Amino acid sequence: MGGYADDLFNLFYRMTPRHMGAEGFAAGVSGRRDFAERYGVLESIEKIPDADNACTRAQKTTVRQVRKPGASPLVFGKFLMASTAFVTLEDIAAYLPSYEESVIEVEMDVELGEAYAEIEHDIREAVKQNRGNRSLMSLMMHRLLLYPDHPFGIGEIWGKRFNPHLGCLEPFLVTTATDLSEDFVYAKERRLIEDIRGELGRGRRCQVYATFTGEHDVAARLERVLRQAGLRVAVLRPTIPTLKRELWYEKQLRDGVEVVICHPKLVETGLDLLAFPTLYFYETGYSLHTLRQASRRSWRIGQKHPVRVKFFVSKDTTQTTCLRLMGKKMLVALMMEGKFSGEGIHSLESDDDMMSAMARELVERGHVGESADAVWADLKRERAQHMPSMPVVSKTEAAEEDAQLLPLLSQETLAASPPAVHLVESDPKRQQRASPLWPTGYAEGEQMLLFA
Image 1 (cartoon, rainbow, N blue to C red):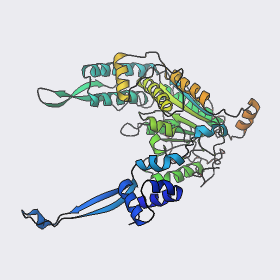
Image 2 (cartoon, helix red, strand yellow):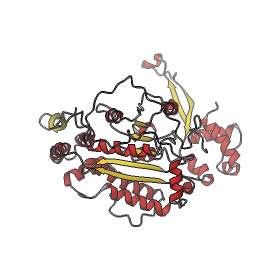
Image 3 (cartoon, rainbow, N blue to C red):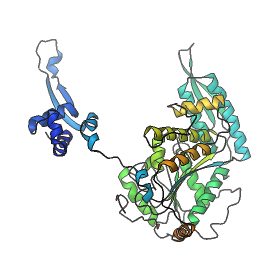
Image 4 (cartoon, rainbow, N blue to C red):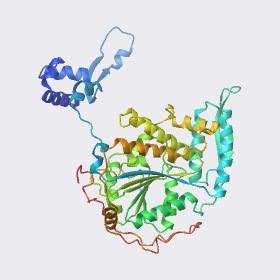
């Protein structure tokens, strides 16, 4: 009859025997049983024979209890809180390399900007006329976030609303998204390529996050664009089992991959991306938890080089609104956790729904001109005030550190790309020369070690 609750009972009795006795749990079988009944997870199974289904007074049902894995959350407050210490990466920041977040807003190409403005206008009118329609709101925000990164293959955008005369939901056409060329490299993609070239020129491999990886696959689009720019790219897909993703990354390093693209949820827990000191959020999504976890995959114990996290957004779009609201939510979350005092932070919305907040700003045209960069700059200042001071590094030391990083690209490859690039089909037979493993303190087979 042993189980999870029994293991906890034995652990707590070794740690705090007096506390367990004061709570009425005696040592031995009886105390273990009482503890399991109060704090464990018990499943009652009732067996009713078919004969008892008839109208009879006979009671032949049997009931038995089975212990299941798990424990009540009350265990934490009762027995663990007094003997628990919470240590976060911020507490040891003085012993880690620097961590920097920046927002890069990119002006859309004229044709894309005009097409986006038309879609935004039609969606704004639809949301105005159907206030409170959450399914419509969700779909419309999804399309506005997607279109700047995937302005083709979307076509007609339909919504659903309730018809009181029919007593059911009916579809209606909101707008038709203009199909732009798939062979043109757009401004945001060109800026990403340029920035990645700069990072690779310093020997810094790059991790790119994209959240639209389904029907309109932005990750596949980025893979194609970056390959055409001469970069060695791999895409991590959900088909790679969780326990095999660390080995997958090791294989990409051996194969000389310079850039990895994936959805941030695939790496938000359990992976230390020490080999990728530069992280790009090409798209962020709605989840603050996912953003916080994925943005720290490289800033871990064992990292030897400064970590840079860059958020890419198309200027004056819903992407900018989303990132700005995510920054404000981050400030609020860190204040509630006691990380920041909150002094000097003003105009924080109390909305608990990102989608509703974005839809309201779309309809009311609020916060026009307020940049996402300003909010994340506030976050950076708060971190600087409350995190342990970072070790001071002179310009000479910084230059020597950069010199230790091996350049991965030739000078010809690093040449600036033209402002407008048309894609051509790549040669699948092209062999890519593997480069040495990344010199950032990464060692094969040691990725999950706590200390390097």
